[in-house]
Length: 107
Image (cartoon, rainbow, N blue to C red; front, top):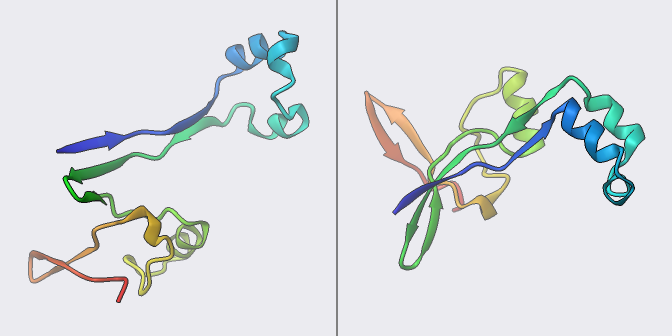
């Protein structure tokens, strides 16, 4: 079975204003830090995950660790030489001569 995992963090001003006007909810916010994200929108990290009887495998191959993201933004190669977050259980592959070839990043 393959499923999509879509965690997200959104900064929607009308909803934030409503929460901040409620004393029970307001205590969960760092209002000074929140100011930095007003008008930002948000982010969603979407992964396709294959689930089998003996575990799971992340089929999404995009930068996730801060170091990976910054390296790619600077023009670094992708995929990297080393998997910085093996706990994500990513299934690594590269395209060679028009065909996808699986590679083992954890050996």
